Image (tube, rainbow, N blue to C red):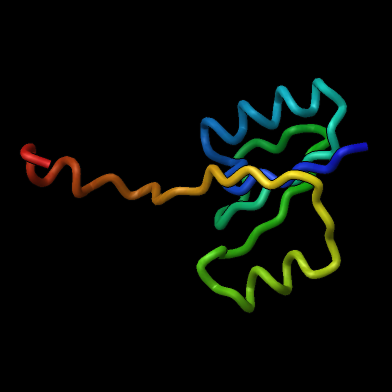
Length: 86
């Protein structure tokens, strides 16, 4: 079975990708900074900060993935609303 890690799996795009991957019988992992608000069945959730090398090494050191999809991003969009010229 192919194992897939989705970084940012608790976001809108990541969650919807995981729904489709589970339907296709992949072994799915979700890695996010924050815990999921609504867990999907058959998804293994991992929580760490990918900007911290020690944190990510501790979270992933014993795991092996065939595919990694990075959908992680900054969820603070306040800068876009401060200046309409942005």
